[in-house]
Length: 145
Length: 285
Image (cartoon, rainbow over all chains, first blue to last red; front, side, top):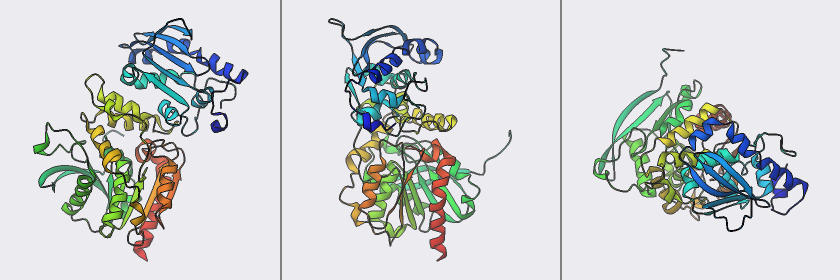
């Protein structure tokens, strides 16, 4: 895949749905990752994560995802948001991501993701969030390799 | 094998820098052309340990890696405890030259990575006659910032964890896990504010745009090598820099990121071996 060829957040039906569905697997994947949960043991935060076409309100408590609900939710607050294009997630989740698509902050640098809000919980648990959002990597997302 | 003793020897040399004696820790192995290696911002000379035990390279080169003051086993200068650390172009250049002078190295090769790659460009601009060759890894005259360095040193964020997490993304995926872990470990061990202080040089004081065109590679050959996964100093940054230096040699290294010598030593070896061979060939002609 050439990520540059699909580097916008235009909705494109099936492709976007695959990314959204893959993102939905993160809570289940996290629940089986005791080491990652342990690294987030002091983390309690309400944040907005996911593809630009369908972000999710995510409630994290003690490193575990207690709730993940599709946005928007009426008057729901979040401390920070990390949203990336579907193409960015698909590239990030490849077993061998292409250069420049292999890190959350590489994606923000190239304009494929945005990071907003109060960044303290994100920066104080930066590796946690990098690993959390990488959980679907290599999971057989159609089109990823 | 339990009991194996590596051939690397570590010692301290007293070096006067900016009017004050610094106790500099360095490691070395090999005989031949002096090859001085500069570590990345916020880390230390352990990054070079694989090169230091290379059986082939050490037959032709005396490979030396030192911890910059404030890094690794080189303490801050006595008078500077309690002060904010900020690396400048002038002090960085003076440190390298003073270290080489203190060890009485005869026209060494200097190879630096990241901030070490940037300062190599400054050595090429201002002090080329003192060096046999210069090698810049992940080097460019400038690159765009991609995060706010204020996050690196504040009491409500663990400095070691955030420094390590930031640079973890600069390592190419799927390299040797233990090498990745070790590279990141170096960042977890830096003193408070040291990575940030190094980046003052990188982002503020060491902008070499418009100056690298002065480099004359006929006086001192210049080699630039950058990993394809380095999104801090990107391949485009290095190629742009090389394009403005007639005769500079630029190579983009596959499956490597910002820390080639430590994140995947075997892969890096394939790229650095021809460079060292070229330097040897020049000596023999």
